[in-house]
Image 1 (cartoon, rainbow over the protein chains, first blue to last red):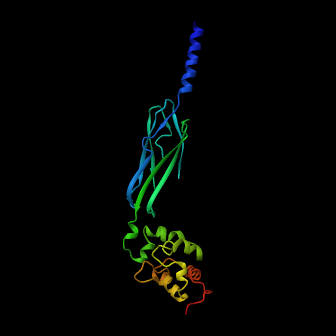
Image 2 (cartoon, chains in turn cyan, brown; image 1 turned 90 degrees about the vertical axis):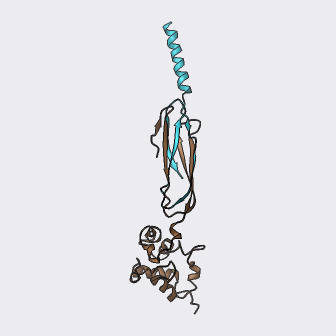
Image 3 (cartoon, rainbow over the protein chains, first blue to last red; image 1 turned 45 degrees about the vertical axis):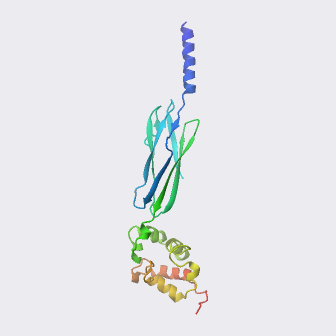
Length: 64
Length: 161
């Protein structure tokens, strides 16, 4: 009986890990500052969310 | 840029983007590639755009003001310790080219050497051209002035006179 439970637990773990994935969600990936002047501070914060079920790692940001 | 490099499930974060628009104007677009461990989409593109109004060049300044303040970043500093053609490209060409306010190189070469020398040294009245030699409040040494004149109006070009 104990052996059966352990086996079941083992399979559950495998199932859980193989379906746990990070998912990056960005609702607004584009931002338009409109018209600005050279004296304005041009800064924007993009809101991001991990909509998945394991840790999302931001590995790097590459600006153009 | 990101407030945190790692987000737990359900966690929210921010990616900060700032754009340096000093000396720029017109339509500007920047993109940022976000690389994550999301297996479905390793890369996501963020983009920002803006129209930068050119306030600086619309104001009326005295010619010599290009040697100070914010103006000198583009109009003087780029050419520091450069000579001849190199100096011309960095400190003159932003005004002396097609579609800009001042004469192009070809047009200047139709002038006499004396005319060119006078304009470079003393500036041109009622225009945005300041005097570049020290006697007229300019930043260039005698050596730099001569090299510049030799480049703009070489002796080898036959004078129209």
